[in-house]
Image 1 (cartoon, rainbow, N blue to C red):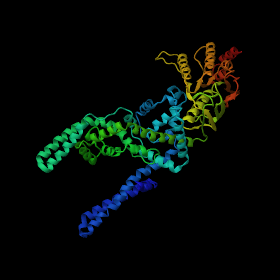
Image 2: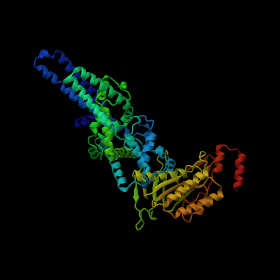
Image 3: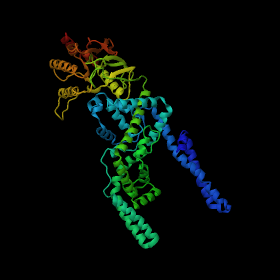
Image 4: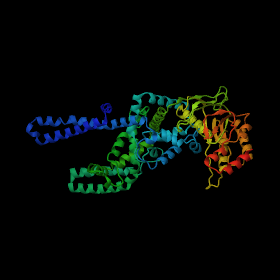
Length: 594
């Protein structure tokens, strides 16, 4: 195996040519000396033994070729964008990910709810980051980004690994090569076996007994009576074939997932995996028995003659059913160890993807997460630990304009004209907080902040199926925020256009009351609004910032930079003019604003 690993550094084309040459040499030696070798007398045996050398070379190269291919894939993937990566097609990827997140979610680690995830556009960001080699890595990447408050030790370990993968080419290549060797298979996720209650078949003793009868029938044929033995073999084979046919369809569903799990169990050069592999010792042999000539739903579906013969031998001795149930029994006994193996490999794969994404960004920084202030209760947000962002930008916006801001408790109100950048800034802050806490880096020159759970109300909609209006949907969401800030976990609340679905008088009154209520809670609130009356109504508590535009003969221009204070310009009617509204409409609208 070590020789194969060393040879894997060569080009795959060279290794494939050498492997083919070794195979031809082996066949040629055996064929030539097998047909005319007796003419050489005793030397014939030495000539035949000489075929062992190219055969061994072939065996070594046979292992080296896939390793070399994995090495090439690893190097290519490091600087690739998630959507451009060639992948095995899935029809159930979203189902796998949703099931995994539901099974492994941990509210104590600041789980980001679906609404906030959608508001921040995290699905698109996840897809950009996702250059993972394995389904475990893709699931873990979603889990890491979904949990905004991981334990400090876990976060520190991720940061250390990310730094190592990003700066140590040799270590990164070894890890990536091993992850690439695990790979993916169509609609196969070991988590579907490891986190579901899959147990050994109650008929397992019968499978073992039938295997014993198969052995007895062979002994009868060889040592007692050929006719009786052959009849016994036929009866056993037909019985085992019927059992196999009834059970193979169930087994074949899990085979792809178990094949991926088998490669996880055999993985090398992945940090933290060796100890877990030892704890599930015995699994590799059972996997080999099952996955060599793996069962198909029907025995007639085998790919070639060799596989067909092997399959019928396995049917006769019930090898598949016995091996499958042995694996399931082993998983059931050591389920926590197999789950830990899955999550360890997945998290390393996910950190690899996060390190790759950081390496592809021109401007990032290591995030500093501050502890609560001295003398404050555990989990309480101290007033002297503000959220500091210097040169922060949105990772999905081309040529994004960086912004710098310091936001202390209780937060800030952001006013501004249409399209000036308020909503994008809210998303920028939320995304940076998630990455800083989950991945250890931010899209900025500097990031410094306390630990914050994140919750947002940015995208709003009505729901006809449940009879909820635009306003009612938003009011419910704000109420959920009010409930959440009653906990010990410090919150970052991102609100765009507070209560915009109702009349201006009630909107202003209710919004000011809500913001004053939140100011007394353990939260930092960032609220964007067009309504400057709301900003003035809470100016004694909240910092005030704004985005604006400039109008000239060519239209509106935006600098997308945040400023201190309250916006003094308006552009809604000017935008109507630029769209092409009738001049009468524009004139009447302007007169009514005076």
